[in-house]
Length: 149
Image (tube, rainbow, N blue to C red):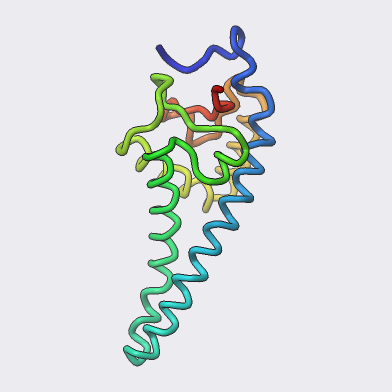
């Protein structure tokens, strides 16, 4: 089947950049809340282990962010922020993401998130790309669409 054609079905891509920004903010807040919980547990574990537990806090933060995004994309093809914004991520075949594609997309997302130039390039691409894809979407063939009703 494939992704919706932006010329024949523009309603799937209308407003996606703004919705994606809203989803990003919501997901950042959810992730921060999850990280605060993990950080509190890590802080307590640090006291119990005489400081050794504190070494695990930073890797735990990265793992929490990955697990949240990967699990939501694998199960719903959308994070909580995406669901609230009314969008979802689709694979090159137009279907919801499966586990392997959700994992690769999550890794690519974090790679571009932590490289500011890659994020800027992605935003510029999204502004001019008919499917409103970010940099990490292009090689994977994924696209964010308005959730079909």
